Length: 140
Image (cartoon, rainbow, N blue to C red; front, side, top):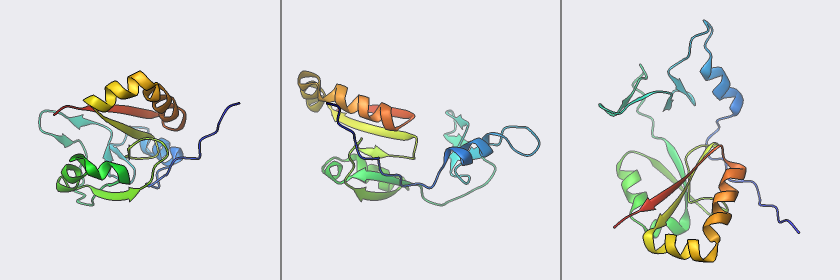
């Protein structure tokens, strides 16, 4: 019998309707940001700056599974200006928005997850609930 997962935590108030509105402005052109200007649609990898004209210094909020605070990544994100919300997540380790989810794996955990089949289950759950699931493999 098939188990159903509880709905994932939605930490940012971003709806698909808001994203659709951001994709089309009043004059029919594509606007440069979505999620109230906090997420750029285009990103310049040479300079590391989004193509947003506003200089919004508001910190982005990321839901972080409480078990992930044993790793160094939450500290790095905080130092980078991100606001972290410690929660117990049922799907993924980091939720960036209602469409972006990240599962973090160390190399040893990756091998164990492959062997046990847990990685497949986790990837399947992320794909079910999030439009853009990601696997982050952390090297030493």
